Each structure stands twice: as C-alpha cells, then as structure tokens.
Length: 231
Image 1 (cartoon, rainbow, N blue to C red):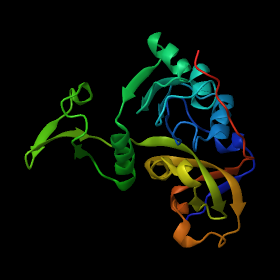
Image 2: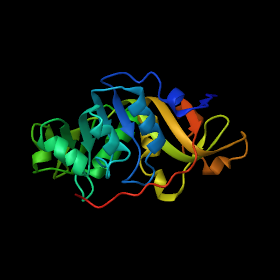
Image 3: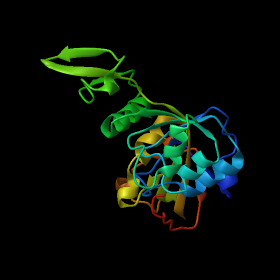
C-alpha cells in the first residue's frame, strides 16, 4: 500500500512546486482552506501559477495573500467575487490575472473526472449562456448538453482533520468540501492536518481519502482566521 511522507515543516511540504504549475486549493470560502500550506507556497516563491479553487480569496489571507504577492497568473473558480474579494477584484480589473468561471457543480465534476480517468463528459449546466461559448454541444434524449473536460492539477493543497501513519484522511464537517476530489486529481497531493494518529486508529469506514492519493503530510497547529470588512 502507498505510504505518504510525513514531514516536519510546511516549507518541506511545499518544496519543489514549479513556476507555471496548476495548483488545486481546497476550501469553500474560509472553511477547509489550507492556510499554512498557502503561506508556505508564498515563501517558496513559485510564480505564474494557475489556481483552481471554489473562491478567489477572502480579505488578505490564504489565496488572497497569494494573489497579492503576485504569484498567480490565472484563477479557475466558481465564485470570484464576494464582499471580501477585493484583492482579486483589483488585480482582475487591472488585467493582472486571468479568470475562468466554472459553475460549482461542474467544477467538482471536472475535478472528479480527472481523478477517475474520464476523458470528458456532457453536462447540461451553462447551456445557452456565455460559459458555453466555443464548447461542443450535443442534444441527448431531447436535452442540450455542453462538453466539459477534466481539470488536472500538478499539485493539490488541501486541509484534513486527521491523518494516520499511512496517510489516510478524515475531514471535519463542511471543511471536507473539495478536498477529496482534489486529492484524486493532482499528480502530487500535499495535506495539512490538525492531528496525526497511529496507523489503525482511524475507523476504516470513516476514511474519506485513502492514502494512495496522498503524497505529503504536515501537522499544523489550529489557527483561526478572521477577515475584515470589504474596502
């Protein structure tokens, strides 16, 4: 069976991420965001990144901090704008970052397809909207569909609640969100966890992400982030 590398520091965990990489970042807003790994990526210095995540950052922490550091070339996400996404908003309006908007369900399915080895799939979401422009469409059983392709990552950065010595993962409530599908869709999956337990301590029925999808793990102390109001 696969065994993930358990590393001592965040900087070790994010080492080797190359310029121009596609990085899948777990989280739904602030929930499940791998803040420590993102901070480590900022220190690491990789640039011209394509970031795939549900949102485009909150306040000036996490993804917003990575954007503010000028390391991101393109964002692929479902919700690029909310009241506290002013860092992304300013960069996008200035033409300093590209954007691809993907409906949330399509984003999850495109990631899942990458992990499942599916070449492409037809989806009814976005038919007849600007998001379908330039894409192949097909009518199946009387309904129109758009052809969507998988989203693969060079690296996935995700957060989990617990990991065992093998690298099996369990998540905490809604912090689970995109972590499981991103772990399957990346060449290298890096995970920050709040707790490491001996192999065998996790109930196998509770394991969400098996160790075969996990490459690197680092334990971090829990931190609570708050975001100030929009400017």
